[in-house]
Image 1: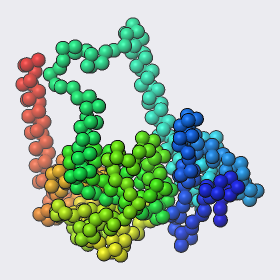
Image 2 (image 1 turned 60 degrees about the vertical axis):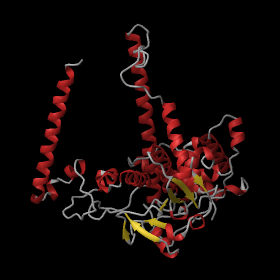
Image 3 (image 1 turned 45 degrees about the vertical axis):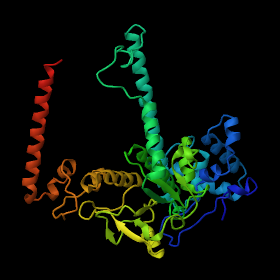
Image 4 (image 1 turned 90 degrees about the vertical axis):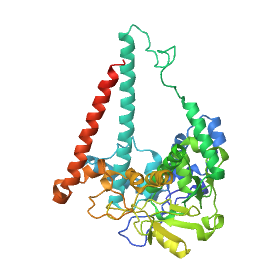
Length: 430
């Protein structure tokens, strides 16, 4: 069944794709915004000085105006349901704040619970935007008040305040970006390949696709910060891939993601067509072997998949079907859940590539996922500091760990004393 009038634009048909079980959430639904973005003429958009967001709202209004009587009735029911949520005091935007494409997304959701969760999702997103906007305005007002108190003179920057130079050399942002571009460009020729599989759109909800797009943007940024960047491959990623389109929609600076300037190889080919199958290793939480170390010839594959709505081991099943080796990180006994976000996975792999130490690499895992460890093998890390203190919880405290905890606290106190003595020592030179 189609909720979009085919007379508007045949390319903008949004079909409902139900899951097999009625109680399971829908996966593989089409996001209206992404479907509209696929058909945008960006040259005409830039000529009219319109943003992608403006074009999406404009096209969504046209689709709603051409609704049939049945579709208008369904939209009216959803609006009445929204009014009921507001009357109950639940988290939801007002009717004037909800955009046209968001009403179209609500039409695709089958149950009241799913629509209630969607209302809460867009409410929290808008609240976050408003908070950031208010902080920016308050900061601007504070800056103007400080200028008024100083007699209308703007405060000099720290660089201009020292005309004869400084003790430390200042590194400008352009210099840092040039150095990063040089490292990432070198990785295209000499870097270690790291493959991200984008062929998971059919297993995700629209909000999961958008979340995956944000995480993949962070993956590209994290790779630029590494001393030895990876050569990133986005495989099974045609031009109309929804994760790829989500990256473009959320970040307009990625319009040239598939060009040489982005330093990322984007292709619609499979990893089996690009690399020898004997060198491929699929990283999955259900991997058969634990990744203690690896050969230089191993090429790792990470699934671009957000499994909040579909926790099945899809990546593991795909690797077994294609007869590819599987592996998992040494997380047994260290974290409660083995699933990690793509940006966290990128930090772990990048740190281990540079240091070859799992102890340092696994420090990037959020504290909320770590658990107290009683038995550790030789290769599994024992992380001190924040993770050790976090494991000291009254409900799960073990007296056998009191000695290690006390030793750590003594070490922290001694370090603080040394730092204070160094500060007192350098005060004599100022």
